[in-house]
Length: 373
Image 1 (cartoon, rainbow, N blue to C red):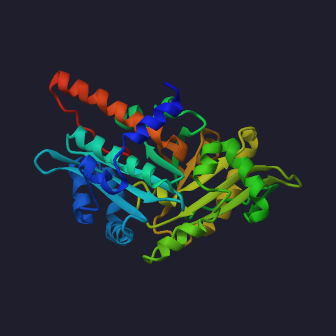
Image 2: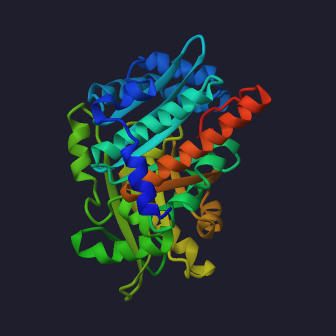
Image 3: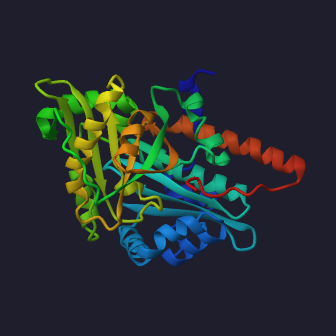
């Protein structure tokens, strides 16, 4: 069956928007922040190492979550299914740009049926609202469950509507003394640099990244920051571009995101995206990386952590090591656009249908835990 016909059949099978959560047996924001965090601990998602990184800031993190939830479902909503007897499942979804959302912290107490419910209900609601332009999630490639589900989604959705990119996650000490970068020219972004930003972001991360992050429509996240400010928080983004001296084509960029601390337990909301042109010679990488990170450090002057979370590709790794950054882990960033939502729904539904068939065949229930361990 052609994809358009499949999409139409999927759409016609969805419940009405007013009935969508009841149809899947899902509740929205039914748990308190303390109950949500307790669920994360019980399922092993908030494991000791991750908890240790959060512990010094846990009070602020909880308060940030409470403030976000005061906005109803405009900034953050948590979907839950199941109960104490059968086991609960939960997923949190937060607004990362004005029209883009991040799904995270998918956990389950040995209840794949509830996991399927929260995943499909959230996707169905987004489809029926029709205003969400993109979704993304982040997962560790060695975590088998999300790698199997989300790592394979491009095969179903297609490369024109989705991507899964593998990144390196570094921690750069905020007190690092970074050299200025020699003959590299660093320019803070303004609207005249739209084409240059689009170019470097496209060659470094791809067109899906450019669209989903709204780099051309709201580069500084002004629109979404207005929503965050209504609950006393902020969501901003600053951009710097790198050029060779006397050249007009960008060779790199750095994009500094700021948001409520701990909205994501790996601090993805405050990440610093480091983009390098794929043809940049290794010999030039240190100067470019150093100059970009030195410029972006001003965006983190009031950052609560001692280290800035830097997301980069393999090309930047040697330079980051030389500059004193610590490699923490690999992360995959899965992204899909609005026109791929129905295919994403089928992809998730198909995965859980196959999983459930195996569970019934072997009379066992696997433990499905968080996607970002």
